[in-house]
Length: 118
Image (cartoon, rainbow, N blue to C red; front, side):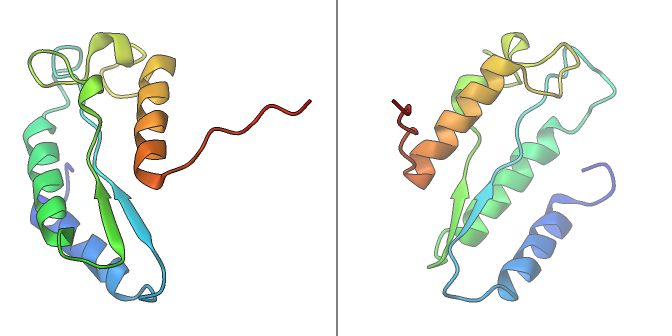
């Protein structure tokens, strides 16, 4: 995000999708939010939102590609990564953050929890 524009990122993702066989289902997870409060060096929040919006729009009518937006449960009231869901750097998810993200992905992928072996 610090090198490419949202449009360039989406264009590159679309190029990868174009060379993937149409029989393959593709799932694109949106870029997760960050916390600007914790790390002012990370000024990518606006490009993250814009990139996710562009990806969602570009993939909306695709038959074999699904865009998975970041889970709202990761956000605080200001729309940034909640402090309870990162490890303290404003970027990397904590255990609770990963739990939220994994469950969100499972919902989209329709994955059932593994049964415990007896």
